[in-house]
Image (cartoon, rainbow, N blue to C red):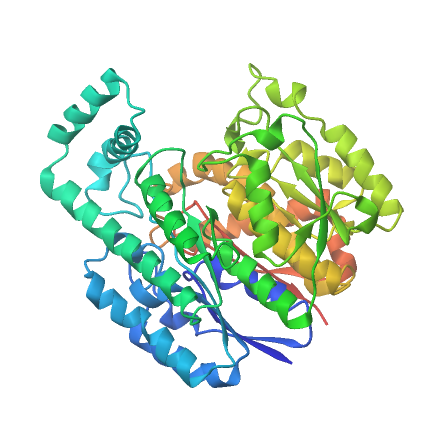
Length: 509
């Protein structure tokens, strides 16, 4: 029995539940995590003292600890963006890992700590209050600062920078940059802990990034430190955030069992694999390399030697939001990709008993309806070892790669637990994010006097409608759910808004 101690990034299902769903596929893996009552809620931080004590108490009986430093140091992903801690205050919490490792030398520590994001829009929903007014300006200021440092700014961009410098209040910029300095310092200290042997493996995900900005400046500094210490194989930096718990959970399982999943990657577009996805800073194909390696696998170039095939439903030359999937004036997705051929190839490999999984990264913030409906029509959906298509490209890749690696190596295709997570992904990633989220927002919320960002005390009315819609979609597109005795057990809105949904299916009998 391998025991894994898990401190999630926050309390949302993608962080708190998904990695446990993956670990639950195997009978000899036990996950220990704090009760959700200690995990905080959105801007309310988790109980840091409790979490530290929990980590200290459980470390001696665990083999691996998968630790979100953003949770341990600040209380979660959103608190990490709005706190007022000094570097010294946060450093003392980080150095608790030294004490724990020194007392438990057997414990492998796999940690992750985000590079703080710079959203490109005005909203204080998950940022400091002033981001409601100055968010877009701060983003542009960030990009132009980076371009000027790299001597890539045009004269017009330099003028825009000066204009923004005058427009954004000095106290706003100082507050924002000070918090980024704390984030940067902690990432540097975490790399130092890898060098000292305290942290065994570290991922520094880039949360909602783009080719220029404060995050890129930070990335260059951290990359230089990694190079200085020659830690390329122990510290990874790539786009992502909410999927990293899954990635490190898969890595912990693979390493504990001596597994090296061999993955053959097959794209449905000769153009899309080079596309830079929305909210990211590098081509899709480069992110896939990082994600597979971080999870403990290896890419192979001969499908006959692979444990399974990862089919990548890629975007066209420019990625679109899922809400734009039916844009009749842009047929680039039809011209530059071929999902028909991908489905035919998938059918062929499945008929040859070759395990297959699907990374649905054609669109941001939701799965590809054409693809999912074809999977349904051809009755392939329940024959997959993994599917994901949610939020960002990095979120999707980390989820499906982690799930499919463990499902394939554990021979879990017919397991109700595997099918449960698979069906949950179809309902959440495609049915909710691409279809029902906008439908309910546009049709139901106005009648209830609610808005997208706040459901007040009427969440039950929203989830009641969603549960009925999900049931109808199961019956129409995924009828095989009955063969695995699955039921929709719980629907909830983790942050009482429409952006994310919690879907938990149960297994009868």
